[in-house]
Image (cartoon, rainbow over all chains, first blue to last red; front, side, top):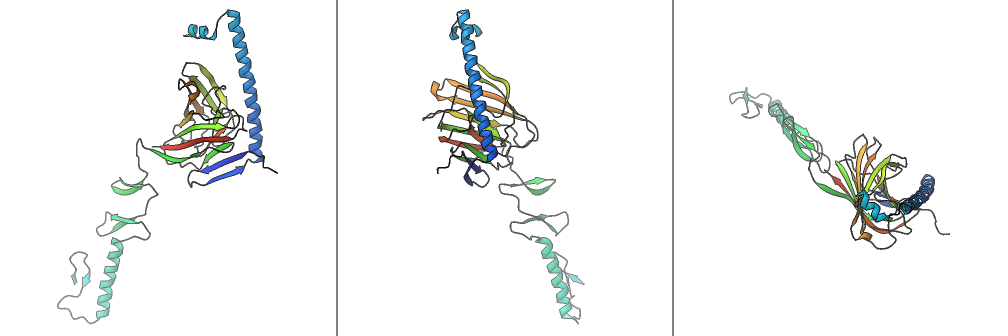
Length: 71
Length: 246
């Protein structure tokens, strides 16, 4: 069965030793949390972009025109 | 009693009747032995000696640490870390792999750290992130701006530093993107100032992202983690180089 655990490369800067190991339970939990946060940020960014486009549409401005105003 | 010119070792007078030759030789030998040891107090590989404030008595100076230089403190020689003002030393370099690369056991002998990441590629689009000392707490405060003056992440605290905006991911194909991280006074036991920079080669070098940051930790930096923000993307290409700055 293939190893599906995320791999982490650890380099000891002092000795130059490099090891590649499976992520431990804490690291896997953090990876899942990062993935969830990442997804939430994407949704938030998309929502902001849609809201911004709607405001510009109401004002009858393009993004470039807004940039010109903001100077 | 006659004595020698330089070290004052006692010898029989020319006119003396030497009744106990063995004792005379032993006395002289002991004096020679004592003087020799005073002049050569070395005990260990790498030791050197210098004159002490007492005539004919040298002081032993044990070897310093790797990279030390001989300097003067209080009028005597001593080993010390070279000031080397302005010098930059590559302390680690290699290829990106796995879901994250952890540069651990960073020597505490430099003043600043500079990390440079180039041509990174991942299996799935994700944002480049850096973590310090493996911390996943929201103690990475950022304010970013791009070349066209767009401010992003205005004083936002996150669980990592990310040099670019949410939309500028690490590509899945070949690229010339670069990321850099500069950590000021990384050994200090106070919050650290950090700046990041990212060149987005997809926009023909016209776009550049920069962030001013604070790392709210009083612990000296001993490790830097390079990863993707989604936690699951694997690096398929790219290089890193970590420099110590004096």
